[in-house]
Each structure stands twice: as C-alpha cells, then as structure tokens.
Length: 95
Image (tube, rainbow, N blue to C red):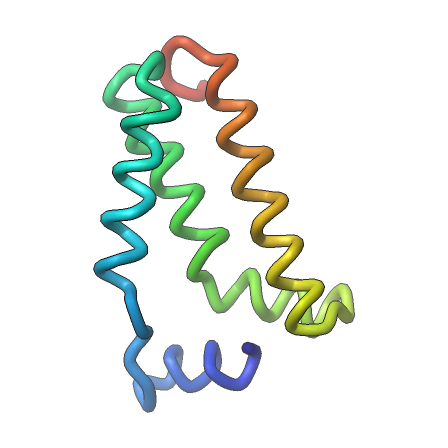
C-alpha cells in the first residue's frame, strides 16, 4: 500500500479506480447524508475521498503508526464509517 501510494505521488503509477471511487462516494453521501446542505455534502465528500485514497493516510498509518496494510485498510474503513455517522447528525455544513 505504501509503495503504491508513493509511486502514485511520483507519477509512476496511475491511481486505479479513482473515477469509480469518486462516483461511489458521491452516491454514498447523497444517499446516506441527504440532510446536509450542499456545502456540507461537498465537505464530507472531500473528507471521504481523502481517507479512502490518500497517500498521506497510507504514510500516516504505515510509517507513523506502524500498521500493516490490512490494519491500515481496516482503519480507513472505520474512519469512513465514523465520518458518515457524524455527518448524519448534522443538518448544515461543518463549521
């Protein structure tokens, strides 16, 4: 995971499924958090994409925290769920 993330950063590898992930998360936000206003939905989408596809997340979980790839994947899934749960409690944008 970490090697792939660094290769993507260096432009040596294209991020696989990027468009599909973006479409998935946009749909997820629209379906599960429709109570948020447009700004709130856009903010949540940005957070979800950051956690789901960020090389910074991979570096944090692998380098800084020392998680294995499997543990880092589980941490990403947990963070995405926690963000969605928190967003469902809001009515407007995050401020």
